[in-house]
Image (cartoon, rainbow over all chains, first blue to last red; front, side, top):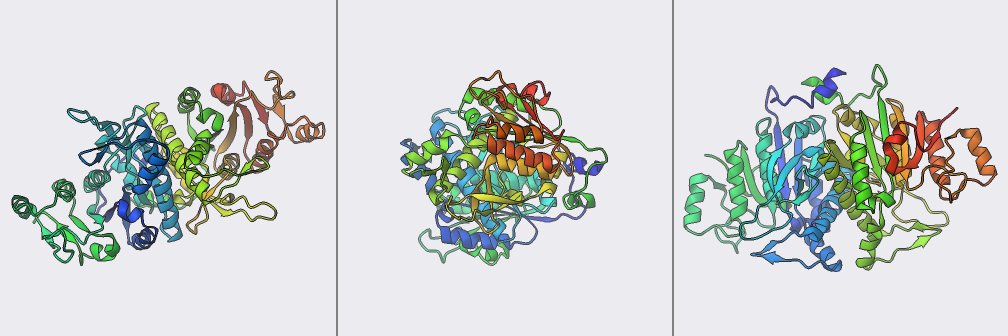
Amino acid sequence: MGCAGGIFKYLKPAAVMETLTIVKIGGNIIDDEKKLSSFLESFASIQGNKILIHGGGKLATTVAEALGIPQLLIDGRRITDSQTLKVITMVYAGYINKNIIAGLQANGCNAIGLTGADANMVQAHKRAHLQTDYGFVGDIDSVNAGFIQNLLQAKYSLVIAPVTHDMKGVLLNTNADTIAQAIASAMSEIYQVELIYCFEKNGVLLDAGDDSTVIRKINKSGYDELKQKNIISAGMMPKLENAFAAIDKGVSKVIIGNAAYLQDLILHHSGTIIENE
Amino acid sequence: MGCAGGIFKYLKPAAVMETLTIVKIGGNIIDDEKKLSSFLESFASIQGNKILIHGGGKLATTVAEALGIPQLLIDGRRITDSQTLKVITMVYAGYINKNIIAGLQANGCNAIGLTGADANMVQAHKRAHLQTDYGFVGDIDSVNAGFIQNLLQAKYSLVIAPVTHDMKGVLLNTNADTIAQAIASAMSEIYQVELIYCFEKNGVLLDAGDDSTVIRKINKSGYDELKQKNIISAGMMPKLENAFAAIDKGVSKVIIGNAAYLQDLILHHSGTIIENE
């Protein structure tokens, strides 16, 4: 029996590094019941270790408006006051997360839904405000890789809502792209990790208006060049910054592409591949 | 490394049966921030294996009303239509569950918040309706005791929201007293289980209006007598039925008492003790 408790205490790489697929989906899939259902079927069919990280959707705004909580945006970013945090915790950690779990279980995928507060999986601190007070927004301090490893070893798939905590009792709204990057980076010490950012376009595009202009591969020097030429759209920048941060910290590959073609993204047949070389 | 995956597969009693404390709290504590905070401090200080099961609170009704979802009650019971289920999933599995987790983590208790859908922990089916259609309400079929055991062995405390699923993608609103009983019963094959039902009164009362008339012990024959004399209030009946169901299935003791005195309940210094003898 001794080993049962013990396995959660020691964190060490497997003799042969197993693969781990981490997929992040955004609000546009979550808001579309049919797209989400089809996506969950694809995700459930991924072989081996897998983690799904989801963003929010329009539901949070709808619920906030219905509850009479005004939604403040500064430079396009939502300000998370205490009432908005309440809505985010309800919608992200409750409604969206548990419906994804029920959907995956129905597809034979034994999933567990968690936030960063659970098992202190992702610890963060409230963002200090120099110019703009974003409210209850978390910047990540640490990822409990041992906890995640042990659930994966026991053949569970994890579904993570973008809510963290500060260990002082405060929940924090946290960017899902950044959580995906932080978890992928932490797990890359133990697994060969591929991180897939799914969204509504086919990849990083040369021409933002033309879905057939996918850039198939980007490395660091190529990225610098694209930036200099102003080819990368403002919306794509944070995703690529996260992608290169992940690569720098040991993630094998980051793939950016269309959620509708998840299987193709996994097989590297679609999307933009971000890697070191 | 082989044993790591293996421990989740086999379910066997420990050589010496460890104790497991299962506590259920209701809406009246959840609705009161100060009471809840004090309760969580007490719960965090419980030594050894522990599980907290929480009910809902007034917040679900408030949110439903704000969203314009009419709340139907038949014989005092809430009818869970699809819109109400949405609210329950948001409030119970999201807001309440994750705030409890953050609160316990702040008190040094390494807790994980789950619903019955997570890891297929509590599987249920939608209640068949003979006279009244209660909507998306679940009756429990099975408890995944092995999953719970392994989290406990790894020193995590569990916090469970009263939402289950049917393995077909449907979430179900499920009575928290009954979930507590079903989990306590299932775990009693592996642990020496004590189940504590916390509410706003000091225990089962001889005079419902007088908190000093706590019945200290009730066994089965005593219960039959109290029922015959109409001493048990209608509201207390389901709790006692669940208590005796738990005892019949191997739970050592059930204690019913005031959430404000959790430590006294654990030490059997307060509340009503339900046991076989």
